[in-house]
Length: 388
Image 1 (tube, rainbow, N blue to C red):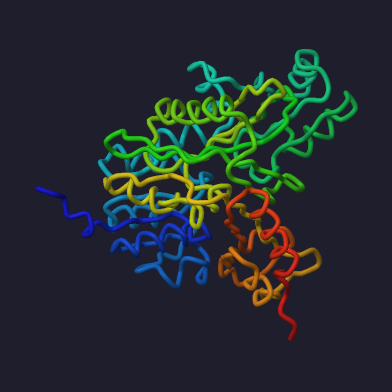
Image 2: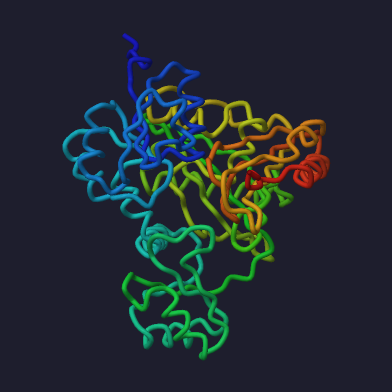
């Protein structure tokens, strides 16, 4: 007898753009969704069936969410994994699992797990003080990278150390040892790529095409799909993503970020246990997008076809420099006149410089044409502060 999937209530920790895009797919499939987010008018608010307005570290609110929902998921990994582990041990369904989140949200334990399982990664070492960092310098040579083990995103929590005189400043910038640190050998690479993978409750796994990720100021700017890499490198990247899902016993969407080396090899950089910015292209570019497959996975539904329909390019829309205040979208009309272009505005009330406010997707018969059209649209549309 088939389970009554549509009676399931989904709880989502986080009401930002990823949560919103999860909800759009969940509602299309008929699910009831409860969001937990401290911001009253967060992007997910208007389309949530219920919105628990509470801080992400509010244990009582998280327990309330667990009691209201049949399954819990989350849109970002910097949350209280220990509290989720307690709920998981009490029998509440949390996907991706709290045990996998606990390992992944700490870059050091994440890298150790990958290394133990033979995944190719950059050399790394734990660093707790200035002396440890100097030992890392002797081990790796200059330049190398110092990282906070927890909490970093979009380049925050990282420091490049180019010479011995940079060590003390980097140590100070990253909290002077108040949080755990690690050092990592700098990898010469020719391209940053990501592969999205999704694993269901029955362990079925699907993998999306490889995306070429281009960053500006450590924030993702463009993703081009398919990435311009060899068939051998493509197969290797997709195989590694599949293996990562097995290592972490992943349920739901994971994003595996990687480096392509000069010889066509691939090193895994970091893992995100959730739908990812670099997978937004899949909404228009693939048969079943990353958000629908995430919902399917965590509710026990069959996973969908990840095939690329057409070449696709995603470009992030960030808050403009010098623009702080109530958000206003300029140039939408002109952007949408360009063939194959779709625009997603997240609905954040206020714009802040470099804040992710939306994205553009362009699809075309070739990646070069999709990139051309996406960049034309990007030139037209801006997120500004509303003039009073």
